[in-house]
Length: 126
Image (cartoon, rainbow, N blue to C red; front, side, top):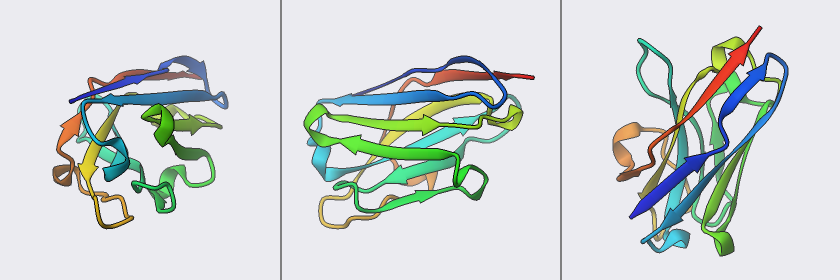
């Protein structure tokens, strides 16, 4: 199983980035996908999650209204559109997969995710 996160970069505060997570080696439509982030000196935290069929979505409160998660099962890809980026959004962003073959929700707990991508750096400048 491989999860490949990409799309990070350097952006000014208020700007936008679109991250993508491409998966291979798993039955993609049976997995919820989550985005997590980890800033230096901080624990990895949940950012957004999407259920296996895209109907269940949840966000951490700090990104609601600014970030949008979506998925294209035919492309084995999940996206995280990040708008109005703030300095506090700077971190390494990881995508992860949790098997949820029979339920629609996406967990918020890090330990419920089995497979992880390598991370993509998001840097926000003032």
